[in-house]
Image (tube, rainbow, N blue to C red):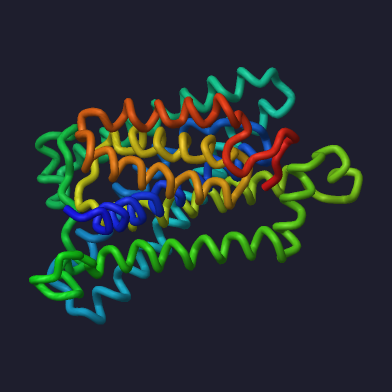
Amino acid sequence: MTLLQQLLIGLTNGMVFALIALGYTMVYGILELINFAHGDLFMLASFLALTLIGAFHLENAGPVALGFGLLAIVILCALFAAALNWTVDRLVYRPLRNAPKLAPLVSAIGVSFIFQNLGLFWGGLPMDVFNSGSSAAAPKSFPSLISSENLLGPTAALRITPKDVMVVVSSLVVMVALYSFVRFTRLGKAMRATAQNPTAARLMGIDVDLVIGATFMVGGALAGFAAVIYGLYINTINFQIGYQNGLYAFTAAVLGGIGNIPGAVLGGLVIGFVRASSDQFIGAQWQPAVLFGMLILILVFRPQGLLGTNVREKV
């Protein structure tokens, strides 16, 4: 496999990690809370996406019906994850706003385990898309709805598929939209003001709790979008994908400078490229060691991350 092919694989995987990492970094930028449940929220959204694909019978749908069906699934999964994330903030994190920092941190770990068990239960439901629920913990096949044909021709050395194009283009559109939302909208400015100084923001008339709730909703929606993209690209999900991909995404957020939106995207891309290069030149079994060894090395010399600063970062 050529180096260019590995770079393409790293780019597509890195885009997915960046989408998940944005949820981590937005919440941390506002609350300085590491929301460990975010990866498992992504996992639950992927289960919803598979459920909806079965309900809409998209496996045998024509191109037009498939397009509208996937658009509906993206919207529904984003809404589901946004609502669930907001609910968790309202019921779990909000009552702990003034508690010691360890309290919401431990609560986030607890929510993560609850989500994992919900995913395990969901995978055991007697539905055709879950193999009639015969093995709840087994990986679930995600239908291959996007073509895997090489757009450059069957004999070309470089392989670029519609799946690759879908991941890169859709992720870029969402990231640009998120950046514009945070930079130029009234709510985005309120988010940045709250991240900078919640007390001053409240004195200026900003409803801080509303802003925090909106941040959780935006982060959740990103996780829901990433879940659909992940399922369509990888074609396999299980109740533990939230832990694995959430760990990589959290690493990406820290690597780029947690609390920094462009940093989360850069961190996701670096993680994707390092994983692909490690698999090609060293061996897949060494992937975690190479990845986290690089993370340690970077953080030793730049603890604030690649784009972070020594002062508190903003959303």
